[in-house]
Amino acid sequence: MSNNLNTGKVIIAGAGPGDPELLTLKAFRYLQEADVVISDRLVSEVILEEYVKKNALVLHAGKQSNKEGSTAQHIINELIVEYALQGKLVVRLKGGDVSIFSNLLDELNTLTENQIPYEIIPGITAAAGAAAYAGIPLTARDHANAVRFLTYYKADLLEENYWKELAQTNDTLVFYMSSGTLDSLVSKLLEHQIETDRHIAIIEQATTPMQNVHACNIHEYAKKWSGNSYMSPTLIIVGKVAALQQEFQWLPNDLSREYYFKPIEKNKKAEARA
Ligand code: SAH
Picture (cartoon, rainbow, N blue to C red):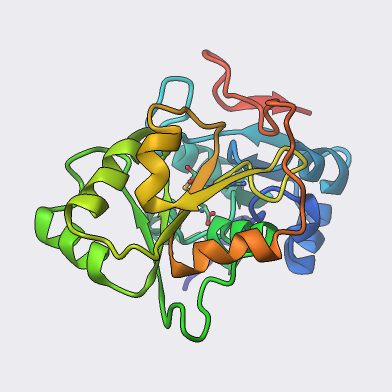
């Protein structure tokens, strides 16, 4: 890769799912060095307040399924390029892991087009964080040999044949960005005769002090919780393994109903704290 002498560098790093201590040492080291940090909404404020170098510029550029108040990807790309071309060390900090349901490819294309050097640092994805903090092994002998990361954020995303296969597999199913379609998700799996031993765990604000886990047999979901709304962000785990939560949970539910992650304020896109 050719490199202009004045060009800075971009570190695309995962911040983990919530608990600030789930940040990698490598991401921490770069946060201590960075001139500019461009952060997602689902990044702990503690990380930004305590781990970032004191005089660094911190920009909040959260994306939230194209909801109002989130920053358009092209604006995030422009910010990254603008600061890197000024010779700055930029950390682009993303919630969870950098490559799971995130716009990593878009950002990489922007960096290569502009010949900006970069590094990629993985993070703990929400599935791994939520499973650990809820006491659910994602794969386990006699339960599931594989795990799938999926999303169902709008109702027509998955085809009937796909639902059929999902209902019949032994794999653990983890759904990101799907709490708004949860009733429909459950009824699709029941429609396609999901086994009677499959459970569902709904994990709100996983790995944060506001974590709550709701778990039951998936066949009882509609009776118990149909129409419920959940605190953002929420992750859904479906499979035989979700039943293990009852035995192995180690963190009590938080009943405060407070939000851990700051909602994005309208007209405050890419707000600076410097
Ligand atoms: N790159 C992220 C995922 C981004 S998509 C990762 O690897 O984790 C955003 C979705 O991730 C949310 O809608 C939610 O389903 C899930 N998520 C992220 N953080 C979470 C948390 N602390 N608790 C529960 N779900 C979370």
